[in-house]
Structure formats: structure tokens, C-alpha cells
Image 1 (spheres, rainbow, N blue to C red):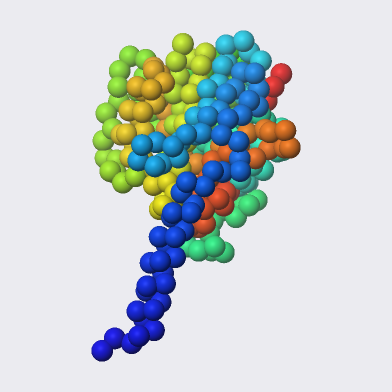
Image 2: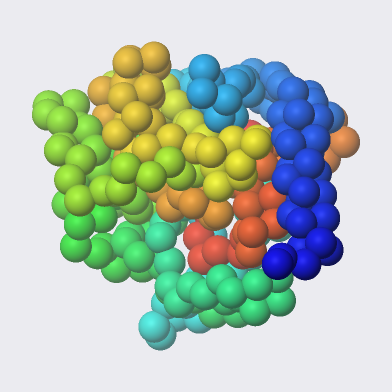
Length: 285
């Protein structure tokens, strides 16, 4: 015969979960659903039909009023980046918009206290990192470059950028102006995503973050669905995937300072930002 207290605990847990989901899911965030951190940047938060939370930013690069900036390495040989959150990067660099960029290593996530990298710890970026025409981190096989110029952006399929690029970071490419890149070997699991799309010859950048790994709040999207969404809804010509999962973070400049616009998840704690190797953002000229 099963002990009564086990049934009591199980019943309480299920009841609490249902109550939490009923209360939290429709509860509007205290963060603004729309924001204008710059005349050239617009932000909109929305809920997809499946209940997942979407954060869309449209960035106009065409008039050259936004200056891209990336994380600088803290050691040169070999290049290492001192891990920090996107919020810390945005505050230090005084950006109007920022997100995490390259995949990185080493990475460990065991519990609230046991994870790596800790803030300030050295970490390695995967793929090119470039600033003011200087290559700060080498390209990596299979990782394309997001090349940022004064008035537009391009995707470099080979992982490199022209010297004229002000800044560059790296990710996985899924569509170019000429052809679609097949999405192969990816999971059908719904997941937090961090996608960049380019249109209008790269003069307009679309950035999508889909929150995920948070049952009863936002489960995320499969990569195939996320790529289809940014392609069809925002009519982009090129698509790049930045590091997603618990790393996916969007930071905007508000009236009262910088704030995290989405809800990342790190060490299974919703709202906790993850320290990562590289970020990029935009300052106003």
C-alpha cells in the first residue's frame, strides 16, 4: 500500500503546476511590449498561436546612424573572451540594442551554482569575430559570418568578411540571397531560437528571439519552423542562426536604463541571463 503522504505531495505538485500555468501564462509582462530605443530600431513582443513568446526587432541600417560593436577579447594568444551577460555587455558598451552572438566553449550547466563559464571566466568563441577590420577570432568550418558595414549587413558563407566590415560575428547559415541551405541533422524539439534575417540588400536587419524551455510560458519553436517564420513573415533574403537555447537574450535601452526584453533561461531558472563569450550590438552615432 502506498503511503498517503506521497499522494498528498503528488496532488499538491500537480495542483500547483496547473495554478501556476493558469496564472502566469496570460499575465502581461511588466516590460513594454513595444519600444523605440532608436528611431532606426523597432521592437514588438507577441504570442504565437502555440503560445510561445516571440521578440521581433526591425533594425534600419541604411542611413548609417547605427554603429555596430562587438565584444573584445580579454587575452590575445590564443584569443579568449571574458564571459559576461548580454545585459552587462550592453551597459558597458552603451548600446541601444544588443544580443548574444557566437557559439562558445567550454560550457557546463548542472545546477544554479555549478555552471561554466562564470562571469569573467575566459571562454572561446566559435567562428569569426571582427572589429574595425581587424580579425579578433579565426573563422570556423561550418560557421558563416554576419558582416556589419556602416550602412548594411551581409552574410559571408565562408565565415570571413571584407576588411571594410566594421564588425563581424558568426553563426549557422540557413538561407542566402541565391539559395536555401537545407536544414539537416537538426532536432525536431522545440527550443529557444536566436535568428538574424537580412532584406533590402542588407539595409534592413530582422532579429527574432523565441523564448523556450519554459513549460506553461513558452516552449520555443523547432529550427525549421523558426526559419520558415522569419522567411515568410518578414520576407528576408538571408538567414543566420546565432547561439540559441538558454543563451538567447535581447537587451534594449529604455528610459530607465538597459533591460532584458525577452525571458532567457539559465540553470533552469526562467529570467536568469547566461554569461557567454561574445555579444554584438549597436550604438547611436
